[in-house]
Picture 1 (tube, rainbow, N blue to C red):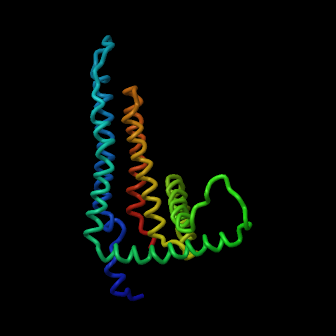
Picture 2 (picture 1 turned 90 degrees about the vertical axis):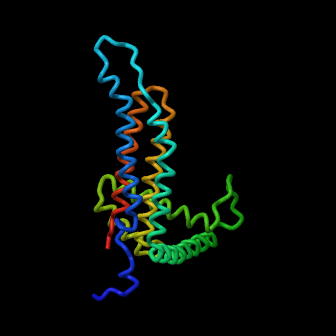
Picture 3 (picture 1 turned 180 degrees about the vertical axis):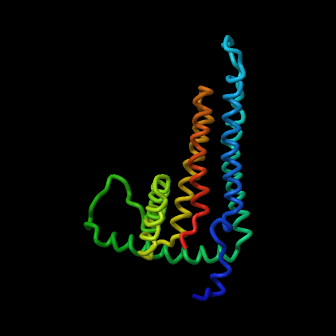
Length: 218
Protein backbone atom coordinates (compact mmCIF):
# COMPACT_ATOMS: atom_id res chain seq x y z
CA UNK A 1 0.00 0.00 0.00
CA UNK A 2 1.33 3.43 -0.93
CA UNK A 3 1.12 5.98 1.86
CA UNK A 4 -0.41 9.35 1.09
CA UNK A 5 1.70 12.49 1.57
CA UNK A 6 -0.45 13.43 4.60
CA UNK A 7 0.28 10.05 6.17
CA UNK A 8 4.00 10.47 5.57
CA UNK A 9 3.91 13.75 7.50
CA UNK A 10 2.56 12.08 10.63
CA UNK A 11 5.19 11.05 13.20
CA UNK A 12 5.07 7.87 15.23
CA UNK A 13 3.67 8.44 18.71
CA UNK A 14 7.08 8.08 20.35
CA UNK A 15 8.31 10.90 18.12
CA UNK A 16 5.12 12.93 18.46
CA UNK A 17 5.47 12.80 22.27
CA UNK A 18 9.26 12.66 22.50
CA UNK A 19 9.69 15.69 24.79
CA UNK A 20 6.89 14.47 27.05
CA UNK A 21 8.42 10.99 27.24
CA UNK A 22 11.78 12.51 28.15
CA UNK A 23 10.13 14.66 30.85
CA UNK A 24 8.24 11.66 32.23
CA UNK A 25 11.50 9.71 32.40
CA UNK A 26 13.15 12.59 34.23
CA UNK A 27 10.26 12.67 36.71
CA UNK A 28 10.51 8.92 37.34
CA UNK A 29 14.17 9.39 38.22
CA UNK A 30 13.31 12.36 40.42
CA UNK A 31 10.84 10.20 42.35
CA UNK A 32 13.64 7.79 43.23
CA UNK A 33 16.05 10.59 44.10
CA UNK A 34 13.52 12.35 46.34
CA UNK A 35 12.65 9.11 48.14
CA UNK A 36 16.33 8.33 48.61
CA UNK A 37 16.78 11.68 50.37
CA UNK A 38 14.43 10.33 53.03
CA UNK A 39 15.69 6.76 53.17
CA UNK A 40 19.46 7.27 52.95
CA UNK A 41 19.97 9.15 56.24
CA UNK A 42 18.21 6.30 58.05
CA UNK A 43 20.42 3.76 56.29
CA UNK A 44 23.57 5.72 57.18
CA UNK A 45 22.69 6.30 60.85
CA UNK A 46 24.40 4.15 63.50
CA UNK A 47 22.18 1.40 64.96
CA UNK A 48 21.93 3.17 68.33
CA UNK A 49 20.91 6.57 66.95
CA UNK A 50 17.25 7.38 67.52
CA UNK A 51 16.75 10.92 66.21
CA UNK A 52 17.52 11.04 62.50
CA UNK A 53 17.17 14.18 60.43
CA UNK A 54 15.74 13.68 56.94
CA UNK A 55 15.00 16.18 54.19
CA UNK A 56 11.42 16.22 52.85
CA UNK A 57 12.05 19.18 50.54
CA UNK A 58 12.93 17.13 47.44
CA UNK A 59 9.51 15.44 47.58
CA UNK A 60 7.71 18.72 48.17
CA UNK A 61 9.67 20.39 45.38
CA UNK A 62 8.92 17.55 42.98
CA UNK A 63 5.20 17.69 43.78
CA UNK A 64 5.16 21.37 42.75
CA UNK A 65 7.37 21.15 39.66
CA UNK A 66 6.31 17.88 37.99
CA UNK A 67 3.09 19.19 36.44
CA UNK A 68 4.64 22.36 34.93
CA UNK A 69 7.54 20.29 33.58
CA UNK A 70 5.19 17.87 31.82
CA UNK A 71 2.95 20.63 30.50
CA UNK A 72 5.95 22.49 29.09
CA UNK A 73 7.16 19.30 27.41
CA UNK A 74 3.73 18.79 25.83
CA UNK A 75 3.75 22.35 24.52
CA UNK A 76 7.19 21.76 23.00
CA UNK A 77 5.94 18.59 21.28
CA UNK A 78 2.96 20.49 19.87
CA UNK A 79 5.25 23.19 18.54
CA UNK A 80 7.51 20.63 16.89
CA UNK A 81 4.67 18.85 15.05
CA UNK A 82 2.13 21.47 13.90
CA UNK A 83 0.80 19.28 11.06
CA UNK A 84 0.11 16.43 13.46
CA UNK A 85 -1.60 18.80 15.89
CA UNK A 86 -3.80 20.18 13.13
CA UNK A 87 -4.87 16.70 12.06
CA UNK A 88 -5.53 15.64 15.65
CA UNK A 89 -7.77 18.66 16.15
CA UNK A 90 -9.64 17.94 12.91
CA UNK A 91 -10.19 14.33 13.95
CA UNK A 92 -11.24 15.41 17.44
CA UNK A 93 -13.89 17.70 15.99
CA UNK A 94 -15.36 14.82 13.99
CA UNK A 95 -15.37 12.29 16.80
CA UNK A 96 -16.64 14.82 19.33
CA UNK A 97 -19.50 15.68 16.98
CA UNK A 98 -20.34 11.97 16.74
CA UNK A 99 -20.38 11.60 20.54
CA UNK A 100 -22.48 14.73 20.95
CA UNK A 101 -24.97 13.44 18.38
CA UNK A 102 -25.21 10.12 20.22
CA UNK A 103 -25.71 11.88 23.56
CA UNK A 104 -28.49 14.02 22.08
CA UNK A 105 -30.16 10.93 20.64
CA UNK A 106 -30.09 9.35 24.09
CA UNK A 107 -31.64 12.50 25.58
CA UNK A 108 -34.56 12.16 23.18
CA UNK A 109 -35.39 8.64 24.35
CA UNK A 110 -35.16 9.56 28.03
CA UNK A 111 -38.49 9.61 29.86
CA UNK A 112 -40.08 13.05 29.28
CA UNK A 113 -40.50 15.12 32.40
CA UNK A 114 -38.22 12.92 34.48
CA UNK A 115 -36.70 14.73 37.44
CA UNK A 116 -33.18 14.14 38.71
CA UNK A 117 -31.58 15.16 42.04
CA UNK A 118 -28.73 16.82 40.15
CA UNK A 119 -28.66 18.31 36.63
CA UNK A 120 -27.69 15.79 33.97
CA UNK A 121 -24.62 16.62 31.88
CA UNK A 122 -25.20 18.35 28.58
CA UNK A 123 -24.53 16.49 25.34
CA UNK A 124 -21.19 18.29 25.03
CA UNK A 125 -20.25 17.38 28.59
CA UNK A 126 -21.31 13.77 28.01
CA UNK A 127 -19.04 13.62 24.95
CA UNK A 128 -16.06 14.75 27.03
CA UNK A 129 -16.96 12.35 29.85
CA UNK A 130 -17.19 9.43 27.41
CA UNK A 131 -13.70 10.12 26.08
CA UNK A 132 -12.25 10.44 29.58
CA UNK A 133 -14.00 7.22 30.61
CA UNK A 134 -12.59 5.38 27.62
CA UNK A 135 -9.12 6.62 28.55
CA UNK A 136 -9.55 5.47 32.14
CA UNK A 137 -10.58 2.00 30.96
CA UNK A 138 -7.60 1.64 28.65
CA UNK A 139 -5.10 2.97 31.21
CA UNK A 140 -6.34 0.57 33.88
CA UNK A 141 -6.29 -2.42 31.54
CA UNK A 142 -2.90 -1.51 30.04
CA UNK A 143 -1.21 -1.98 33.41
CA UNK A 144 -2.24 -5.65 33.52
CA UNK A 145 -2.56 -6.68 29.87
CA UNK A 146 -1.39 -4.30 27.11
CA UNK A 147 -2.60 -6.71 24.42
CA UNK A 148 -6.17 -6.63 25.73
CA UNK A 149 -5.92 -2.87 26.20
CA UNK A 150 -4.83 -2.45 22.58
CA UNK A 151 -7.77 -4.60 21.46
CA UNK A 152 -10.09 -2.37 23.49
CA UNK A 153 -8.67 0.72 21.78
CA UNK A 154 -9.39 -0.81 18.37
CA UNK A 155 -12.90 -1.75 19.51
CA UNK A 156 -13.61 1.77 20.71
CA UNK A 157 -12.21 3.31 17.52
CA UNK A 158 -14.32 1.02 15.33
CA UNK A 159 -17.53 2.75 16.43
CA UNK A 160 -16.46 6.03 14.81
CA UNK A 161 -16.86 8.07 18.00
CA UNK A 162 -13.17 7.85 18.91
CA UNK A 163 -9.85 7.53 17.13
CA UNK A 164 -7.20 5.17 18.47
CA UNK A 165 -4.83 8.06 19.07
CA UNK A 166 -7.53 10.00 20.88
CA UNK A 167 -8.23 7.10 23.26
CA UNK A 168 -4.52 6.54 23.87
CA UNK A 169 -4.07 10.25 24.63
CA UNK A 170 -6.98 10.11 27.09
CA UNK A 171 -5.38 7.08 28.74
CA UNK A 172 -2.08 8.97 28.82
CA UNK A 173 -3.82 11.87 30.58
CA UNK A 174 -5.31 9.45 33.12
CA UNK A 175 -1.92 7.90 33.91
CA UNK A 176 -0.22 11.27 34.28
CA UNK A 177 -3.06 12.52 36.47
CA UNK A 178 -2.74 9.51 38.77
CA UNK A 179 1.02 10.02 39.04
CA UNK A 180 0.68 13.71 39.86
CA UNK A 181 -2.01 12.94 42.42
CA UNK A 182 0.33 10.45 44.12
CA UNK A 183 3.06 13.09 44.27
CA UNK A 184 0.64 15.61 45.73
CA UNK A 185 -0.39 13.13 48.42
CA UNK A 186 3.25 12.37 49.14
CA UNK A 187 4.04 16.04 49.76
CA UNK A 188 1.32 16.19 52.44
CA UNK A 189 2.35 13.04 54.34
CA UNK A 190 3.47 13.76 57.89
CA UNK A 191 5.56 10.61 58.27
CA UNK A 192 8.85 10.57 56.27
CA UNK A 193 8.57 6.86 55.47
CA UNK A 194 5.04 7.31 54.15
CA UNK A 195 6.17 10.34 52.18
CA UNK A 196 8.92 8.30 50.52
CA UNK A 197 6.60 5.37 49.79
CA UNK A 198 3.91 7.56 48.25
CA UNK A 199 6.51 9.36 46.18
CA UNK A 200 7.65 6.01 44.78
CA UNK A 201 4.04 5.02 44.15
CA UNK A 202 3.87 7.79 41.56
CA UNK A 203 6.58 6.15 39.46
CA UNK A 204 4.53 3.20 38.07
CA UNK A 205 1.86 5.60 36.81
CA UNK A 206 4.50 7.72 35.09
CA UNK A 207 6.09 4.61 33.56
CA UNK A 208 2.62 3.63 32.32
CA UNK A 209 2.32 7.10 30.80
CA UNK A 210 5.58 6.53 28.91
CA UNK A 211 4.18 3.28 27.49
CA UNK A 212 0.96 4.99 26.40
CA UNK A 213 2.80 7.93 24.87
CA UNK A 214 4.98 5.48 22.91
CA UNK A 215 2.26 3.03 21.85
CA UNK A 216 1.60 3.00 18.10
CA UNK A 217 -1.18 0.52 17.35
CA UNK A 218 -0.87 1.02 13.59
